[in-house]
Image 1 (tube, helix red, strand yellow):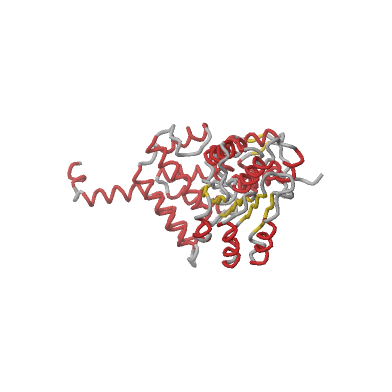
Image 2 (cartoon, one colour):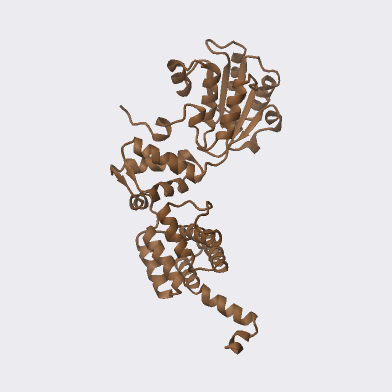
Length: 374
């Protein structure tokens, strides 16, 4: 059998299975239970957060209350006669929309409703929106619309005003990590806790993106999935080497900092990648140092959390804030610089000298009182 991507193989089939969107799931379920289903819905949010899955689940609950397997299979495959899925990115023209409207006059063949799921609805032309608007103003009682979009600001206000809008939030890292862990086990693999959290963070709130990364790891053929394997596949900086670099910065040792930077660069890491990784690590150190080890504002495994908390105690908050600002500034400048390595090395030396620069600034601000007291 052909391989099925994890995002498709483990797609949610019930409201309870949708990860990170429970308020929306509860509201839609309650609407069905109380028979207060609106004629049109607008699902908006970034990619991979469950908009299309929720639309299919909603359609299945509406038209398949007895949970018949053949009907459910057709709906979730996008092949049901009463649940019509349209990719607006491929069908932007008014002619296709008019055909849709004309067909909506016919009653559903076996379900209670004829449900139209229009994905990436913002891609429709203005003429197509205008054609759709008339039907949405006075829809047949047997028709329901579910419009999905990643760019709600491109959907005309006249369309939005006729929809119940649901904003799908980015899925929390912890929720993605928990789901990934269960999938890894169900697929017969093992994974380090730190790897699972790293994949969840790289997903940037998108379950689909995180699952795509996990798919790449599973394709490696390794039964034991590690952060080292992920770093090799994605070209990410080695976490241990990055930790050594941060420790050298904490020690205020420019020589060790430059040597660690050179080691990372020799492994094929770009300056932008290195600075981006440092920004994430410094942010974690800042939060841990300010809020304590048990804060839920950082997403780390228990072991990594303890290690990073001890590392955070080596820095003061103003120093880390300065380091974050410096890395972000140099990361932008390095893209157009004719001498990116020089900028990077200068940045690293400055990071190592942050504490000394702060001492000099404090000395100047005090008017030399620090020296006089000594």
